[in-house]
Length: 224
Ligand code: AP5
Ligand code: MG
Image (tube, rainbow, N blue to C red; front, side, top):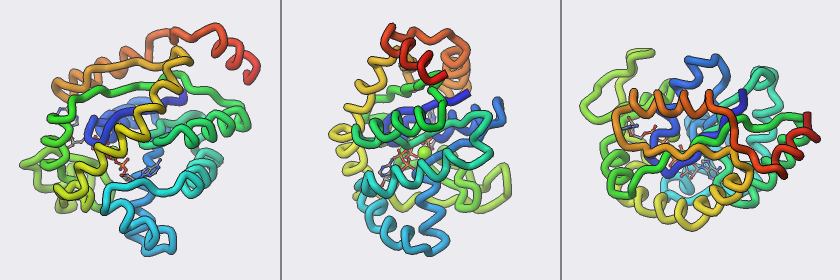
């Protein structure tokens, strides 16, 4: 089972990926979480990435493609994976297509969580995150249910970074959706509603047969 979660900042990708990871027992590969782990560890990459994330901008395609290439090659990805936060640009999407062919894998579903900008702004300003395991929580939560850590605000959820994140998503990441629409693999879900309601829709979309185009089916057959 190889899944791609697509959506704007705050649309619920991480929230639904956690549910899918528990349900299917496959890794959740979140490029934002990977970058924050590099920052927390004080690596060279982390030092380069920190001001970029804080400003709500994108890390270079070259770095991100290298990161996802390394990660998807790890043995725990063999049974499947859930990607969240990649690809964010058309060059990243093209590189991922090539990588999937090399790995002889294909996506079973691309889940698009659609949420209006006003609600994104509201969610991001109130979001809390566990600094240890990166689980996300709505406002008025105090400790992580998984490890008891005190929750904190993400640096890029501060007001000065939230608007630039939405703007760069609209400019660079919206075209990525068109890239996948042609494959017939996209399930578009209205991301408003309770987390449980959205989870039910996500699971139904994952279970439904893909509406692949003839070209995609031919490409999938070639890769199989
Ligand atoms: P990343 O960490 O991926 O951030 P993002 O895409 O901006 O998405 P978020 O994590 O903010 O939101 P989410 O969709 O996961 O929502 P969540 O489930 O938390 O990336 C961070 C940065 O890293 C980027 O800005 C960039 O700098 C860099 N980066 C990462 N990947 C990159 C790439 N490929 N290329 C270049 N740069 C890259 O939910 C949000 C809140 O809403 C939570 O509080 C949650 O509890 C709540 N919520 C969830 N669902 C619901 C619901 N149904 N109703 C009400 N509230 C809900
Ligand atoms: Mg996230």
